[in-house]
Amino acid sequence: MSSIVILSSSVRNGRKSPQVARYTEAPQPASVIIPFLKECKFSNFEGRLTLKKIDGTPMRQFAKEIKKANGVSNVIPAYNGGYPAGLQNAANHFYTQWHSQPVVNATISNGLFGITQVITSLQFTLWKMKSWTVPAMFPVPTADKTFDESGHAIEKEATEKRATAFIAELMWCIEANKRMN
Image (cartoon, rainbow, N blue to C red; front, side, top):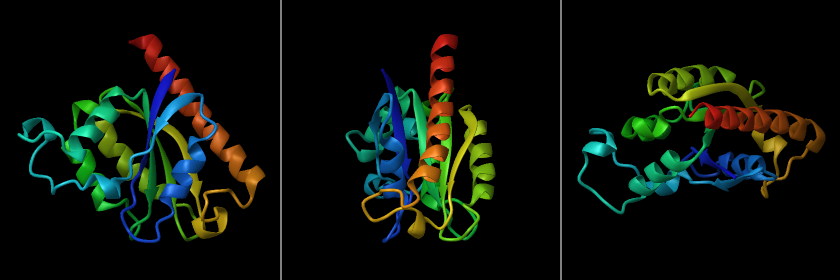
C-alpha cells in the first residue's frame, strides 16, 4: 500500500486548509498522514536539517514522514498572492527528503480564482529540490463557501469530481515512480 503525506500548510487562525486536507484524504487507496505545519514549530531557516544537531523534534519527525512517503499533497492557502512563508521555511529545511517525490498541490482562496498562480512559484522551488512536481491541481476558490467546518463539500458532486481527478493523478505518479525505482 502506498503512503501519502497531505501537508496542511496554513498557520493562521481560522484556516481552511485542515478541512481541504481531510477532504482529499478520504477515500484514499493509500495510508495517509496529515501533518499540520502550525504544529511542527519549525525554527527559522539557518541551514538544512541534515546540518543541525537536534533530535526528537517535530522537524525530524516531519522529515521522516516526507522521506518515507510515496507522495506528498500540499494544501496551500494564498497569502497576499503567494504561498505561506512557513511552507517555504519548511521546504528549505529539507532537500533529500523531496528527491524523486511525486508532489501535487491543492490551493485555497477566499476569492474566486483558487490561487493557481501560487502553484507556479512553489513548483519551481520543489523542482529545484528534485521533487516530481505533478501538474494535477485542486484549486478551491471561495473556500468558506466550498467546505463546511467539518470538511464536507457543500457542492459535493463538482468538488468530488475535481478531487477524484487530482488524487488519481497523484496515485498514477506514485505507481509509476515505484516501477522506475
